Length: 428
Ligand SMILES: *Cc1c(COP(=O)(O)O)cnc(C)c1O
Ligand SMILES: [Zn+2]
Image (cartoon, rainbow, N blue to C red; front, side, top):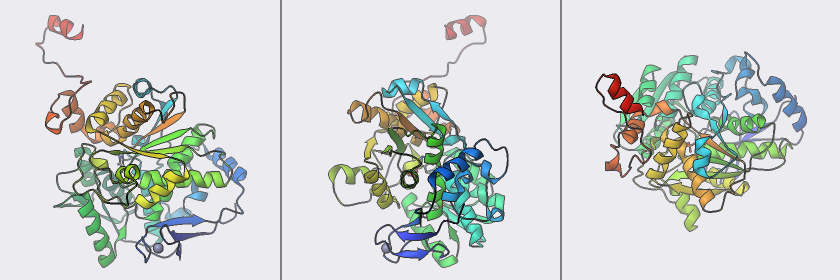
């Protein structure tokens, strides 16, 4: 395979920068994309190469990200930081499909990544870029999963990781991981958006490598979710991909990757991307629905802490991908998120609250007649069920009523006396 030329390009004004230049945004303030010259690349050859790597037992290309390394990052083997991420399962949604009103509904479980969320796909690429820039420390602002992932990958390659989290506002499992993997964890007084502003300034002034999804290399790694879905479907493209939206990096990544596959003729149609936000943190949805200019949501609120973001950095990239794919944006209520989660969990699959926006959103779009019941739909489950045990227990014990959420499908634990008779009653 010949070397593919790549560069950085501003999403807003199209100004180009060298791929070796250490920058996250354009002079104009726009976010940057990695662009490639694909005109001389043989798509069929690439597809064969990727198929030949499927099921590899060891080595860099056994990763579900680096399998596609030609379109991920041109990095020498010795710089690549990988935990064999990706290779996540694509389940039939089972009971959750019935709940959503769909027959051909699949769930891509990104919670099966090494640290329990899709963030690992971006992080393997982002920390590899950090290695290529010889960074000694890396930082991110996080609603939890980015910090868990970054702390792990930084530990694997021996760089210092500095984490900015909104105090008291991230799920327990995620905070536990950040501490366990040895991240320097700074709890700041404020919300995620405040942490994001601070970390950008800190990275600039203290020369620390920034690993939020504003980092264009994170997005490149996350493209592999879409690549893996179509490879798992033998290169058949689903009609829809439904994905939760917080900082809006993930949906941008998935659509960018699929556009590249389309340009290369590896796929012959583009799935429609549906981005689902939580009603209390829905700046993209407001803009989409009301056809108004972008405006941040001041005090974002949702039980789905992973997407509790009022000022998403990638909104421009997200819009581009949605328009490219003839996609849609929608939002769902707290109750809809947690009820959908109950079905994802009861199907035996399980995911954290934010992930279940995919199922809640699919259901809503089916009811609205936008997704047809017989269409093939893939929902992304972004994070593991164990990330947020408080949300699970709260729902099933019906103690979330102060947040306006009732345990509609609660599976309450039962208190019994230790007798066979009590057990018989309890299980009948
Ligand atoms: C980060 C995250 C999201 C949101 O992804 P964005 O790229 O920020 O839109 C959704 N769900 C989970 C579990 C996450 O960790
Ligand atoms: Zn620009």
